[in-house]
Amino acid sequence: MKTKTPTINVSPRFSLRLAPILVVAAVFILSIAAQLAYAAPGDLYVSDQGSGNIYKFTPGGIRSTFASGLTPRGLAFNSAGNLFEADNVSGNIYEFTPGGTRSTFASGLNNAQPLAFNSAGNLFEGDDGSGNIYEFTPDGTRSTFASGLDPFGLAFDSVGNLFEANTRSGNIYKFTPDGTRSTFASGLNGPVGLAFNSAGNLFESDQGSGHIYEFTPGGTRSTFASGLDSPFGLAFDSAGNLFEVDEVSGNIYEFTPDGTRSTFASGLDLPGELAFEPTPTVTPTPTPTATATITPSPSPTATATSTPTAAPRSTPTPRPRPTPAPRPTL
Image (cartoon, helix red, strand yellow):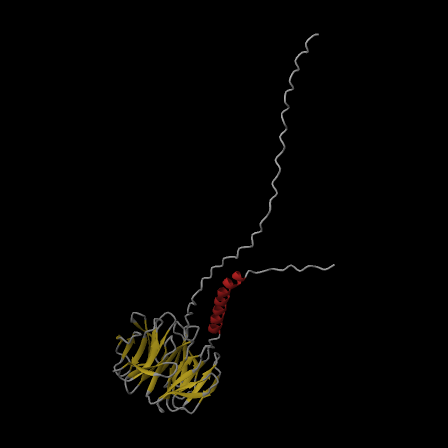
C-alpha cells in the first residue's frame, strides 16, 4: 500500500513578500558578526626622545615607526583611538589618527610633559615649564586646572580623581574633580610615571631610587620592583601586566602581576612615556528596518453547491364532505 506524502503549496505572492524580511535578517546578522570580529588592538606605543620617533610594538614585540620628526614625551589615547602626543620642545600637542595622520591640537605650551584623559574625554597636560596642569575640552578649549607644581606624571583613578607625580618635591598629589588638592604620598625620590591597575592600586616609577612602588587606595606603600635604571613611563595591558620604560638602559620591561620581570624591547634611545592602543568604542549603527507587510495570499474559495433542504410537506386539511341531500320519497 503506497503512503501518500502531503504536499504544502506556498503561494508565490507570499514568498515574494517574505523575501525582504529574510534580506533584513541577513544584513543584521552580518552586522553583528562584523562587530564581534573587531579585535582589541593592544599595541604598545612609546615616545623615544633621542630618535624623535614614536614607536609602535605589537603584542609580540615587533617594532615599527608610527611617527617621526618629533620631540615626544607624554602619550595618551582618547576613546576614539586617536593618539595625543606632548611635543616637549615645540610646545605643541599633536593628535594622530590611527592611520598616522597628524594635526596640531594645542600650541603655546612650555615643556609639555605627561598627558591623561578623564572619563568625560577632556585632556589634561602637565606643563613643567609653567608649573601648571592644563585641561583641554575635546574642541581644544584650554583652562588651568592646577598650578604651582612640577608635573611629570598624571593618572586618573576609577572615580575621576587626578594623581600627579611632583618630581622635585618627592610628592604625589591627589586632586578631586573640582581641583581640591591633598598629598597622597611623600618622601619619594624623583617620582615620574604613574599608572593604576584594575584593582585600583597606584604604581609609581621612582627615578632616583630605581624602584617601582605600589600604593593601595589608602596610601600604604610597598616595593613592587627594584634595580631599575632610571624608570620612567608605566602602563598596564589588558591582562594586568605592567610595562615600564627604563630610560637610561633603553629597555622596556614587562612585569607579571606577581612581579616577574622580562625584557619586552631594547635598543631605544631615551624612551619616555608608554600608552596602549585601546579598543575603540564602537556604537552599533542601527540598520534601517524594512517594514514588510505580509498579507497572506487568499486561499482559493471553494464554491460549494448547496442542496436546498426540502421543506416539510404540509399536511393538507381534509375537505369537509358535503352532506348528501335526502332522496325524495316515491
